[in-house]
Image 1 (tube, helix red, strand yellow):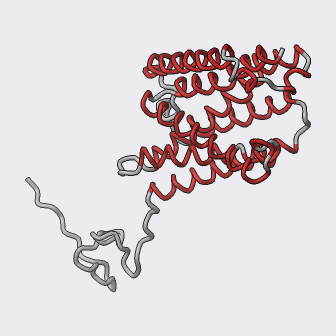
Image 2: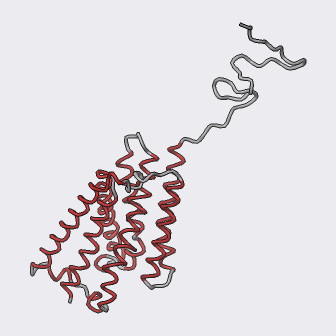
Image 3: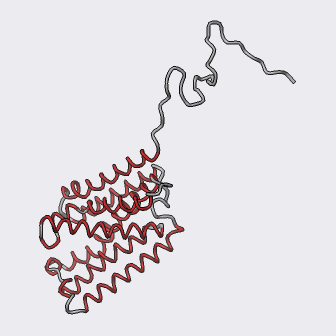
Length: 269
C-alpha cells in the first residue's frame, strides 16, 4: 500500500488558515478575505411571490377587466386566458397538482363536498322561492328585462366558466397552494393561507362592489359586499383545505351563483 503524497505549498504561497478548504471557503461558510452572501430564506421568497400574485389578481379584475369592451364574452375569454397563463406559470414554478387542489386522489372528496354544497344551496333557494315572505327578495328587474338568450348564456357559460372556474383556479388553486407552500411547517400556515386568500378574493370584487353597492349605499354598501365576499372566501378556502380539492369550493361557488341565478329567474319571470 502506498502512502498518500503530501504536496508542499508553491514557493511564495501563504499557507491556508486552519479550517479553510482549498477553494478558500471556511467551515462556517465564509470566504477567506470576506463573508459569503447568504441565501434568502425560501419562506421570504415564496411570500413575496404570493403577494405579487395576489396584487396581480386584484389589479386584473379591478383595473384591466373594466377597461376591456363591455361584452361579457370578451371578458370571459380574457379571464380564461389569464388564469390559464397563471396555472401554467405556477406549474413551471414548481407547484404540484396537489398544491393546486387538482390531484386525482382528492377528486372524490372534492366532488362529494361540492355536490353536497350545490344540494344545500338548491334547498335553501327552493325554500326562499316557495315562501311568500322571502320570494320577493329573489326578484331582480335586471333579469326580467334581459333577453332569454342572454340569461341562458350567463347561467350556462359566463358564470360557470368565466366566474366560478377562473376564480377558483386563481384563488383556491394557485394562490392557496402558493401560500401553503410558502408557510409549510409554521403554526400559522393553515389559517394564514385561508385569511390571505379570502382577503385577496374580497378585494378582487372591489370594482363590482363600487359599481353595485349593497342597498345602493355608496360606502357602507361597498363594505357589506366586501365583508360578505370575504366570509364566503373563508368558507370556500376552509373546505378546499379540508378536502385538498378545489372541486369542493367550485361546488359552493356554483351553488351560490348559478343556483341562485336560476332561483332569481324563476321568481322574476
